[in-house]
Image (cartoon, rainbow, N blue to C red):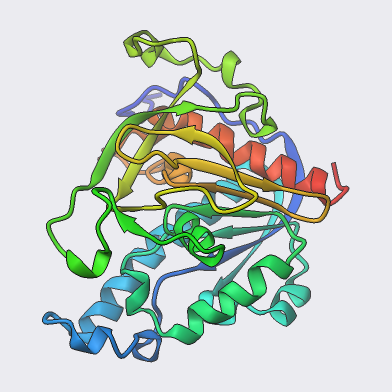
Length: 293
């Protein structure tokens, strides 16, 4: 029998350790022309139909990757998708999730209709469900707690919409609090790239970066978990009796993007192993927080 050729080696076969979970994935990308702000109309390249078409294309990839992670890492996973405009306390009560995961974004937040952001900022601190914010979701959470979102060279995004400094690569970020349970099992990982890291005093993650904006500092109450060279705030957590909010600037959801594609453009099943570990640990921590693990 001829086995199908694979363009990557599966170093870490994925065997789901978690039994079941209910997860809500929040689509943070724009869905309709009405989601755009009056500011957007003043942009020189304003083309609402083309913008929304692009947003929907990216949303399909981003939300699909997140849902795929949940389904691959949990034996029995129920995943519901809600758009940012549907992010309400009543909708979340009906969904009854064990975890909420926020997708990334594409456009600057001042191009969003203010009602979308005001509603998110109102609902977020009132939730008792564990939350994970990824990339733009990380920035949206920081913004909701009063931190401005800036370019990587610390400029107001409105001053430079294009030709921004960008992190678009696999890169290393340094763990700043290795005791957090989100890093459980990190030391046991087979990580062939580790020999490339000169300073081994602190653990490092190798993760996929795709962003041109950042949070310049931590929001009140949050603790830093990882830092990078261009972007200091790479990962953070807010932990209290009622709340558990993790955020990552990088993309931990890339692991299963091209799992079934041959030939594969990316080798995320290998390269994103650290991200996959963090994703799995978040789901476990969410279940613990809910008293289900």
